[in-house]
Length: 155
Image 1 (cartoon, rainbow, N blue to C red):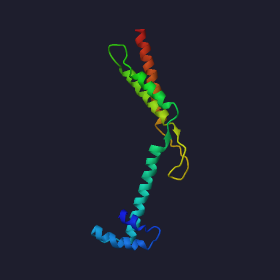
Image 2: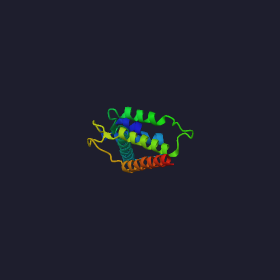
Image 3: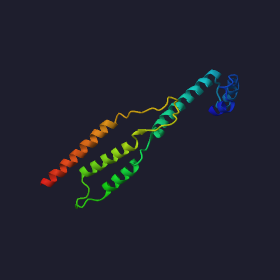
Image 4: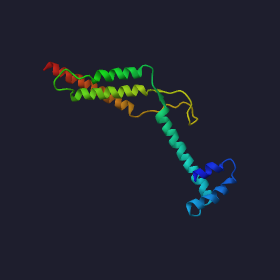
């Protein structure tokens, strides 16, 4: 259906909806009205536009700050080094590493990109409701790991 509509382009010339309505029942094998075709095309185009805006916000809404990638790579490399203890990486260290990876990832996506927006609304900043919660969790995990290390040093 969309292929026929794209070939005929009835949006610029409304009389072409009749030719689309003549060709489509042959392909579908059932009768269909011009109004039903037009409404279905409008619905599909609206859904595609909505998905396109959502995907655009997900993939193109942010840019990487200068130096953030290098900082994240160096942090990740320092955390990936094995500890000198025989037990390997304990749970607290893994939680700290996870929190640092998350915070590094958050800094990579913190600044909104400038440029054109397919919505036509200009530059939009999307609020992330989980960001503050994750930051608090990361801080809590870091503090807990520091307390665990201090306790281990005391013993």
